[in-house]
Structures are given as structure tokens and as C-alpha cells.
Amino acid sequence: MPMHGDLERIYADVLARNPGEREFHQAVREVLESIGPAVDKHPEYADAKIVERICEPERQIIFRVPWEDDRGAIHINRGFRVEFNSALGPYKGGLRFHPTVLLGTVKFLGFEQVFKNALTGLPIGGGKGGSDFDPKGRSDREVMRFCQSFMTELYRHIGEYTDVPAGDIGVGSREIGYLFGQYKRITNRYESGVLTGKGLNYGGAQVRREATGYGCAFFVEEMLRARGETFDGKDVVVSGSGNVAIYTIEKVHQLGGRVVACSDSSGFVHDPKGIDLELIKDLKEVRRERIGAYAEERGGEATFVTDRSVWEVPCAVALPSATQNEIDEADAAALVRGGCIAVGEGANMPTTPAGARVLLEAGVSFGPGKAANAGGVATSALEMQQNASRDSWSFAHSEERLRDIMIGIHARCFETAEEYGMPGNYVAGANIAAYARVAEAMLALGLV
Ligand code: NDP
Image 1 (cartoon, rainbow, N blue to C red):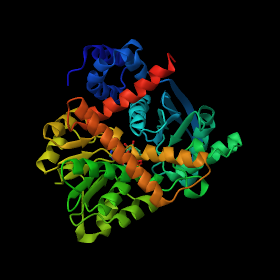
Image 2 (cartoon, rainbow, N blue to C red):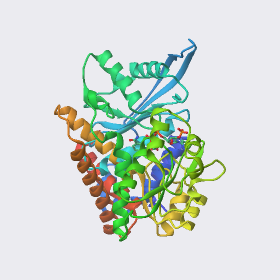
Image 3 (cartoon, rainbow, N blue to C red):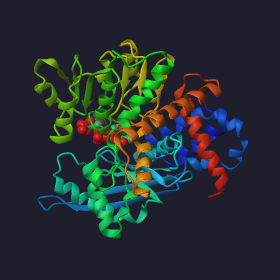
């Protein structure tokens, strides 16, 4: 898509200042391609160089994480925290532990997070962090030692009014527990609001574990409603089988859809009668097995496929919930051929720009991650709210709050797209609505 002239210059500058950070470039480009009309409408933002400032993180922290494995061998990993934008509230965003994590990965995620958090309407800024540590195949004690070493540096940069990390790929409730324990030990403070995604018996919130997946299903339900459709009786494909994927499957089933395939990095399983979620939960949350074990335990009901893309399975709704750039142009074309009418991004940036173009041109309702997966961070903000008031809400109340927030995000994207003459374009709606909220706050706070 052509970019507004000033934005083209700003983008060239981003490329020059952040060489080699491909995913960060992609995330910035997607936003800058959308916000031209808002930039024209508000020259006062341009005068204050708001876009240039939004593209530059407020602070980037990189640190060494030394730790010892069970055999006594020493490992050195790299830790990151990018505190991107705090105009709307303390930096907020997850930690990712995965061997592919580089500074550019964390910057792309942090940049997306600024806009996502703005869309929730809640008082949270954007940040992200992580490490190139791979928890896969590590014992609980090794993971604990790594988390303790990671927090021994990170603790000085975070706080409930400063920066509040949470989980992401490779960081679930086990890791959050170890991280919180070390923070508490070092600071001698039971500061519950410093991390979210905590266990329910030490300051965690109901529905946080389920929130990203449930929220994505609620968002897609709204996109379907806008087309006069529902989940009822529809076949759905979900990628991944981690936190987001599992709770997406759970809510889709409750809303009447049937998830027929899910995956991990080794391949996908196709179960035409519907995924047995209890089995997936047992394999992934308890036994930490690979997805192929699902097909073995389902006997002849399901097949395990390693030589094709999960997006070749025909479906009405696709919910990518694994990682970035997992739907390319060919995958998007396969989805359209298979009858797909809606895609909701549970993961962050799972669709490549060329893939997104194919979906939009085919009239598929396309909910970008910063809108569709914002339920996780929104519920994290609710966890902070409960920690601050030393309260804890019921599951039903928390889920109702989440649903209201997702309906609100959908309405904000939908109405903004209409207002700017791009009806049904949730990418434009999300980017413009979020940009306007962040820009307004930055303008009010002066040149900081
Ligand atoms: P998990 O670690 O719980 O699960 C990730 C899943 O995706 C696993 O099944 C994993 O398979 C698969 N996966 C990861 N990397 C790859 C890869 N390179 N290729 C293929 N499959 C891969 O992470 P989450 O469920 O928490 O996160 C999933 C996505 O959702 C991420 O994009 C994350 O940023 C995003 N997200 C998460 C939120 C949350 O609340 N957790 C909030 C908002 C967005 P395997 O085990 O084989 O690696």
C-alpha cells in the first residue's frame, strides 16, 4: 500500500536507524501504511513529531543472564526489556523465552503492544521483553535457576508504577511464579502488581490464563456478527497448542464452532469430528508432549501431518495462535480457496503483509493481533486493578469484563474504519484508533 509522503520519510529513517530488524520494520510499516488519514487530520501531531517519537523506544535494556544447568555446565543467555511508550500508563507487555528472540523481535512486539494497549481503553503503556533461552527440554530446576538469574537483573527496571511484565511464548505460570519469587526475595516487597499472569493463590486473577484465547474468540464472534454470521456449526482451524491456542479452542467450542485442527512446531493434527481439548490440555499443560502424541492417542480419529501447512485444512474461520509470519501469501490463498470468511490473529503478527493483502482483497474479515488478541493484556490490567485494591473478582465477573472490553475494541476498530472511509478494514481501524489515543496523550504530556 502506498504511504503518505511524510510517513515514507519517517519509515526510511526507521530502516536506517534499526538495521537488520526485519520484524520491527514490518510492524512499523503496517502501522504507517494505515495512519496517513489521521496524520492529515491532525497536523498538530506532526508538528510535535509524534510519529517519529512513537517509533523510538523510550528505553532499551539488554543484559547478560548466566545460569548453571543440572550437570553443572554454565550457559550465558541474553535478556531484553524494551520500554517502548509510557504515555498512557506504566509499560506493560509480556516476556518471551524462545531461541529465536533478538532485539528486533522484542522491538516489534513492544511496538505492537503500544497500539494494542491503547485499543483496550485501559491506562497501560507498551513494552516487551524476553530472552533467547529455550525452556524446551529443561528441567523445572533449570528453568527456576534461569528465571532467578534473569530477574536478578530485571528487578531494578520494573515496578507496579513503572513496568509490569507478563507471559508470552515460553513464559507461562511456572516461569511467572519463579520470576515473582525472585523479585519478592530481592526487593523484600510483596508487590503483587509488578507481574501479571500469577497463580490464583498468590495474587493472580481469574480468567487471565484464558483471556487471550477467550478474547480472540469474542472478537471474532463480533466480526462474524457484523457479517450476519455466528460460530454455530462452523469448522475452525487454530494454529499452535500453547496458552492462546488452547483457550481459543475452548471458547470456540462453547460458542458453537468446531475446531478441526491445531499444531505445534513439529506439525499439525487434523481431527474432522472436532479436537478433543481435554486431551490437548493433558498433553501440553501437564505432560509437555509434542502434538504427534495426540493423533496416536486418538487412534484412527485424527491424523498427524508434517509435510503440509495447517492452513490447507478447509475452514470457515482461521485463528493463527502460534507465532509471527505463519500465514504467507500461499497460505492465505489456501484459506480463501477453503471457504474461509474470517481470520482472527490470536498470535502477534502471524500474517505476512502479502498474506494480509490476499485476505483483505478476498473480502475475508481480518482481525489484526493488536485488536483480536488484546484480551490478554486487558485482563492483565484487571489483575493489576485487583492487586491494587487487594481484591479478587469471580470468574463470571472477570469474563464479563473481558467480553465487554473485546466488544468495545471491535466497535472502536469498526467505527474508526467507517469514519475514515474504509468500511470493514479492521487493520486501518485498529491502527488509526490506537494512534489517535496515544498521540493525544503524548501531545498533552509535552516533549518528553
Ligand atoms: P506458548 O508458548 O504457550 O505457545 C506457543 C505455541 O506456538 C506452541 O504450540 C508452539 O509450538 C507454537 N510455536 C511457537 N513458535 C513457533 C514457530 N516458530 N513455529 C511453529 N510453531 C511455533 O505461547 P502463547 O500461546 O502464549 O503465545 C502464542 C502467540 O500469541 C505469540 O505470538 C504471542 O506473542 C501471542 N500472544 C500471547 C499472549 C498471552 O497472553 N500469552 C497475549 C497476546 C498475544 P512448540 O511448542 O513446538 O514451539
